[in-house]
Length: 498
Length: 142
Image (tube, rainbow over all chains, first blue to last red; front, side, top):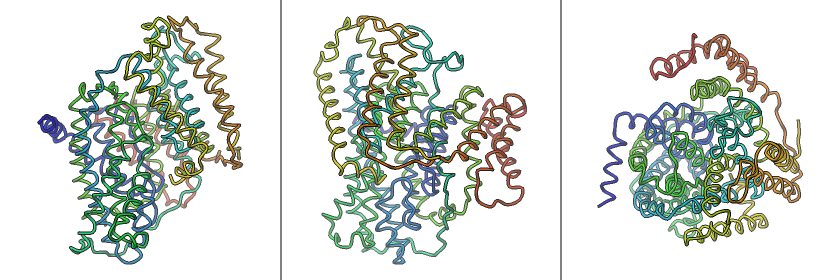
């Protein structure tokens, strides 16, 4: 009964005209960037982050989430018609593009659209059902548990990062140190500001996101960007009943696999697609056809990545642990709005949480309309040249950065961070852990120092409760998994797909 | 410019660790275990980062070189800086125009005549919409 009450509150929030508009805008932007080469959800969310500063919190999160899962939809369209997967649809590409070559483009696009819809809907139901019990964990947390939880979040970098565990840990430490620039909350002392008074409030989250994700990636794109040629052929979208019957079971299997993988740290959309593909290859009635242009090869991965994109919100919203770069940016967006995701968030901000869940359903319907009947329109987007797109992106960066604090010096900080971000990107250092360290580091320090005062300097006071012992055990397991990954080529190769 | 992917991450970590660690050690109080000071946590993280830097160099097996496109990077940074300087001393409209003009040098493809002017016009309309419709505080005309 409680879930119905919560959901009705969520729908009341999400169905306001304003939030509907932001949800739709997020879906449109998401689909567009999913289609366009060179811009993924991470880059786009980091670019739009400053603009959300002026929006109400719920609307901002609804729009950013729409961009994320909208990009998954758009990506499958470009993967099928042009064999250009950008965000996640590497697996969809295999069968989807085969179907396109066999003249079954319409069927592949329909299967992708409807499967994504099924995957997204099932995952949204799952979030509604399991988030409340997970949220109640909040009552078990004091400063010691919070410190350990944040340490766990930082340790998860080894799993979040696309590079190796050691570099992931290193870059998270760089993030922690950057997070300490500014005023020390415990002593009121200015730290690492190099005498620059503008840094007294610390480096802005927006500057970090733009420098390390947005602009660094743009510079990389400028090195060698190719203009894609749009698909202009004709196709029939509505499938036969026999084909439709093949989509459903495969989409359901994909949704189940994707929902579970989305919950795990490091289990992004690529892993979800891969998992669903493997499961279908084993259990589908048409398993022999998979890999040669079968409907199952499209619908299972599409349902899985859409489901994973949604369930990956659960660790963020309930524990405050972002499991990939997009979730790290979402964490940043929430922190910027003064909301601390983690135990207690669902209880403290129910309208935000349930509004987001409800908006996922609404977004799903928008995306179905956008991507199935209107897919022809989207394919024409490829005709936009990069020379037009690029000044627009920079404009959003500049104006957005300035508008957060009405301070032009922030633009100089972004310029400096872009140089650093580009260097990191080129030497293979993934910036997602840096963002994680930047956000969690200062909180970890605060909770750690608080617990040291409470425990009178005794480090064993950190493991005074069962919750703390469980957290310490998980931290040990994560470290062991990270070290195992270092020594196992299979795990190293796993992330090369991304 | 090419740089080694084997050594670069480790060297970056060591440089950052030394910069933050030394600054913290000489300028802030370490405190006691009962009352940790402002230096304790940064120094602990810097030491960890230093060790991670050494481990990164020791364990990395790659022989790859990373190519840095300094021209593209310089153009983007110059675009941002020109926007900031013009906005600070003249107004944001000039800043936007300067940014579009400077960054157009990064585009390798052939562009139609007067494209920069058209882009500037569109961006100014968008900026005006931000200012007047969304109420953002932009010094568009000062």
